[in-house]
Image (cartoon, rainbow, N blue to C red; front, side, top):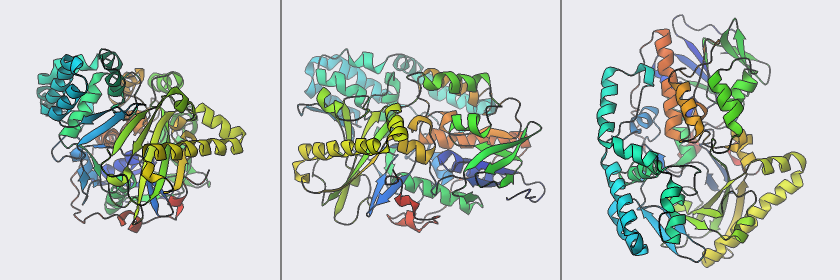
Amino acid sequence: MAGRDHRPAGRPQVIIIGAGVAGLATGCYAQMSGMRTRIFEKHVLPGGCCTAWSREGYLFDYCVDWLIGTAPGAGGHQVWRELGALDGKKVTEFETFNRVMDEHGRAVTFYRDPDRLERHLLETSPADAALIRSFCRDLRRFAALDLPWELTPPPLRTAAERLRTARAVLPGFRLFWRTATTPMRAFADRFQDPLLRRALPNMFLQEPAGFPLLPYLYTLAAAHNGNAGFPQGGSLGLARSIEERYTSLGGEIGYRCRVERILVEDGRAVGVRLRDGTEHHADHVVSACDGPTTVDRLLEGRYTSPTTDLLFRELLDRPGNLYPAAVSVFAGIDGPLPPGEAHSTTYLLTPEQGARLPGALQNSLVVQLRSQYAEGFAPAGKSIIHCMYFSDYPSWRGLRDTDRRAYRARKEQVAVFVREFLTRIHPALAGRIELVSVASPVTTERFTGNTYGSILAWQAFSEAEDAVNRLVGKERMRLPGLRGFSMAGQWVGMGGLIRAATSGRFAVQYLCRELGLEFRAWPSDNQEPWHPGKWRRLPQPDRAVETMGAAE
């Protein structure tokens, strides 16, 4: 697609910026619908934030904690089948969703089975029986609902699709309304037991600011129904599978191809200019990368709308609209993990401990025994642990820009704390932690391009949600005054991998309607079993998978 590359008449040419999940999904659906596409990706790997990096034989899986859409027939699964994301893979389902332990060793476990959860919570705090029974009753009601995943953007839905959604939602309407208007923090504060007051908001590993009850119940119900499992291969494996699906459909990906400008002629996007100065032209351009980068740099701020102005000029820096950035720490362990431990635990820290974690927004640390999630993350005879905490971004950015030595020392401070903490809670690990890798919010921003290192972009139930819904629905993921251009991804369709993938589907459906093409999609038929080394066998531009955690 170099220069004015003229393709066969009648086959639209589409350039996609970014090989994250949204960009790959856009490419897959465009190829299935008869278009010819090429993705330009600045990094050397697919996936965007859905990635991993390796060091000394360990694979540090960075993104997926659970994946909505893993259960056949359940919400979102059709999208992953069409994209080949789960081809040949086993899915791990844990009996527990997460465990929360306080500073004194007292713990509450969030089982995915409502009956078992209710018994455990009642044993933990009999005085809170009424609230516990109410919560678990709502959980059972969510688990019993058969909620469809919307596969078509709102303006293009048929009467039959709208009727199907209405029939599915109507039985739970009062439940949805009540739980969507009840803040989790306010609900948790009604409990008498101090551990339950603190544990409930941390069910999602750490507490998302401003979340109501609804997403907690929805996700725990999804886990109960087997629809929030962990796919074999993890984050990079997911991205590699979609990449394999895309290339099998005839799509092309250019790695190390950083887009500097979207080319516009007479109010129409006609292609892109790369950092090396080459220009590539097409009939349509889809930007599936960072939202502020798209509007402010790639389009030089020349094409905006009241909606994008609200999102990227006002709400971007207003607290509570972006998911927080995070610090991720991976520890390589010589030997096995402690037996009988929960796969995921949120440890509530003392203020003194929290103060030792640079930039920490909450006094807690998530510890995940990643070798329990899937095989292949550690060399034979070894194991891996992932620790994470929500962090501010500016303090990390400021240090890296002004004092690299202090920045590296701050990362080392995190590593020292994690080593000490892991050996305190698991004494058997003493002397066996042979490697620690720290990724800061700046690491995330540098390698994925996500503004402020926010992995999930816009937070649900925030001021941004209405604006995003307007951008997807009424404005059809476009910008006024600019033809031949659309957007996809978490900065357009809200946070989460299934939302990112679905945004690519929506973008192509809109494009098909504009071009008069039939939108086509079908499940992948690849049945080759996945195995731990499979992602290494797929085409790799170079060995830079080794660099993400080490390059700073």
